[in-house]
Structures are given as structure tokens and as C-alpha cells.
Image 1: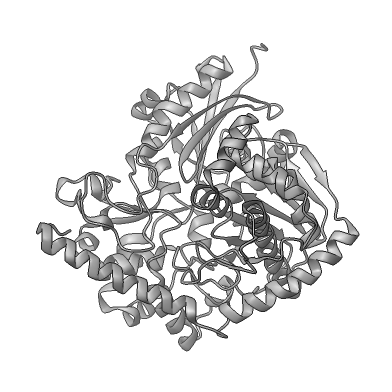
Image 2: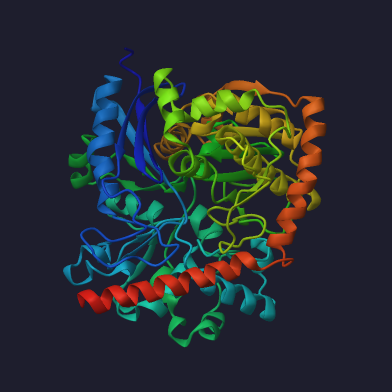
Length: 567
């Protein structure tokens, strides 16, 4: 091994695990990786050791699980790479977003304080924590009434997933925890704080998730109108120094060096979001290249040369992906999660046994069966809203739907209909971009789902676009490593690092004309369902959510009465 070579580490924090990759600075070669699964995973029912059930649409995590990634995945990656740790010159990280942690002034998560260990609002609120929808609705209504200039930058709607809705919910549900919170911190920034001892907000989450536009957050007057006790949310809990993507946030502390086995004092890049950091890894930084990072959910990001207001988008941010460009973001709240839910809850044991007998996974088995179907043969149409709708409706009170089932419907047919539904959801997003003057010319796909060739061809056919997949199996981690190389001074900017270290395409798909035509007919029906249930034609999904919340509230009251335990 060349003694002059240097290496960087990229750490990708996903929904269920953290992954570390060792990357060679000169050419982006991925030399070794390590994975650590969060011991507490995602808490949707109860807190650790707790007896009281969490309300509907909650999704919490334990922040120490993130530290454990540094203690376990990073040393494992270095060992797998077989390199001298002394040659590592930088580390970069990315995170799912918007994932929020309430902390003290020194960064201690509130759940780690004994008096708050049994308080749900003291824990991490994961991106898919959607129970702040009522607060999001009020933010949107007030912003529209006041004509707030920042609202169009977010497609006209602020999501319940984001910082302000979740923060307002915390205040109104548990004022004591809110008062004890000194900092409302994106996990992307908290992990960098743990590595460096310095708190720096990254420009990406501040812009997309924190309503930071033109150097300002929403005004104190606006916050007061939402709730008088929310008046100082920005000034007291949120506002902090903003770090630009690719900049150095600080250097690795002695404590973090002991966790990771890396040299103290190396560069630590400003935090980033898993989707946005992937763009340079995929070499998808040109205008018109829509990058979709497909995993449990999908995030769509794209650079644009001009500023446009795109209805229903997650946001457009100056420098949100790459300095000097307008970065656009959209997304689907459920994709791989939907497929995972179906195989866990809706596939009979005989199918699992047959897959095991062939030595393949259940997803692969269902895909093989679904591949034999002609388009439309199953007679089904699904709405991919099992985790709500992030774009373009921005409504997490919506829910999944499958139309056309009969007593003859087979699991593989439902599975294919769900694959197709997520592709239709992506086409809705693409058409919104195109209509707003932000043309999409090609699709670039990253994430674990690229291995499903049927799914990739469906996406190409449904969108009628050429599609390529990213060669790296750990594209977000590679993207973080690219930013670490820039932070360490190895490249002048992210574009140069992307050109040298980015991944070449793995597979290329082109739309099949007859498939495009067949899916066009199905997409018309999907659009009709999408608008009927999502744009006010029928409010049944919202009414069902309200009925569910009331039933769960009654159940919780009954449990408290029986046990005498309440949080």
C-alpha cells in the first residue's frame, strides 16, 4: 500500500443502523465498512422499560445508540480496510432528517437526565414522528394568512416532520421538558457536537427543516401568534452558528478519538443529510439530474440553476446541496417501509417457506413471481401513503389504500401494486417539478432498493425517463467521506472531490415504449385516487385518524386507571 495515501471516514446514520466506510482520498475507493444496529431501533409503542403505550404516529429513538455507532462501526470499518488509523485525516457524517434531540446547553440529551427518563418528549423524535400534524396545520394556516415570504420556498406547506412543528408539539404537550431544553438540535448536528465538542448547525437542515431562508428564521411576532410561550423558540432554543457544507466544523476530541480509534485533531466536516450528501457520491450534481435515495423512505434532491417555487416541495435552499446552486428537495415518507410492512404482515407462511426452500429472501421471491405479470394484469391500484404523504400533498394524516382486491388476489400481485404505487408517487413529484419550470431529465437512484431490477425498470417506465443506479452500496457514507476530504483540505470544493471520488453508475435502465403507454393509463387512475383522497374530495382518511386517536386516548386512560402509572 502506497505510504503517501490518506483516508477519510464517512458515517451514515440511517433509520435502524449506522454505517461507517473507509474511503481512499485519491480515488474514492471504498476499502472497508462496519455496521451497527441501534439496540433500541425505533420506539413506536413504549419507552425502554416503560409500561404506558405511546400515542399514534410517534417514532422515538435513544441518542446513545448513535454514540455506539462511533464506538463500534468506525473501528470495525478501519479493521476491515486494513489501514493504519494514523493515515485517516478526516471524518464526515450524515443523518436522517428531520430528527430532533432536546438537549441541555452542553449537548446532554434530556432523556439522559434521570428526572426525564420516563418522559417521551425527552427522547429523539425521528423523522417519521408524525404526531405533530395539528401543530403543522396551524403553522401553515397562520403563515398563509399572514403571507409569510418563506412559505412558498417550502411548496406552500410546512411538514409535521420538521423542527418547528415538533418543537411546538413539545411545548404544548410537555411544557416542563420544553423549559428544561436549552437546545433543539438536529441529530445531524448533535453527532458532530459529540465528535468535536463544538455545536455548529449545518446549512442543509437549517434551510430545509428549520425554515432558515435569506439568513433569517420565522419572526418572533409569528411565533408569538402561534403560541405566546413559543415566542423565544428561535432565539433561545434554535438559533446558532451556521456551517456550510464541506466546511470544517471542528476537530476530533480526545474522547471521540478514544471511541473511534482515530487520531485526535483530525478534521470533522459540518453535518449533512443522508439524501443531500449522496448527490456528489452519485455524481448527480448537474441541473436536471433528480437523485432519489430509496430506502425505508425516499428523498428526492436536485440542483437547479434558477429559483422556482414548486408547490408541495420539501424546500428549495440556496447552497442546500452544493454551494452556488439552488437545491430542491421532495420526498415520499414510505417506500421500503411499505414493502417491509407487507411481507411482515400480509404474506402467508407458505411463501416464506418457499423462499427459504430456494435459498432466497422473501422480497426476492415475491419479485420473481411479480415479474411474470403483465402490466395491469393484477387489476390493482394502490396509494403509497402508509406513512403519510411528504410530497406533494404534505399531509401525514393520509393513509395507504389498495383498490381492486378480490378473493383471487395473490400476495405477489399486491406486492407489485405497491412497487408501482411508489413509482407513481415519484412521477407526481417529477410532474410538479416540470410544471414549475424545474425540468427533470434523468433519474439517478441510490440506496438498498437499487438491487431490485424489476422495481428500477418500473420506475423508468412509469416516469418515462432514463435511469441509472449508483455503483456504491454505501452512497451516503461515501458522500460524507467526500465532504470529509474537502473539510480536510484535500480538494478545493465538493465538485472537485465528487469528480475524483464519486461512484460510477452500476446499472442503466431505459423506458420501454409499450410499458410507458400501459403505465400511462394506470397513472391516470392513480392521479384520480390521489386527488380524490388527498385534495379534499373525500376526507375519510382524516376522519379515521381522528377516530383512532380517540380510541387510543381512551385505552391509555384505562391503562393509567388500572396501573396508576402515567408519564
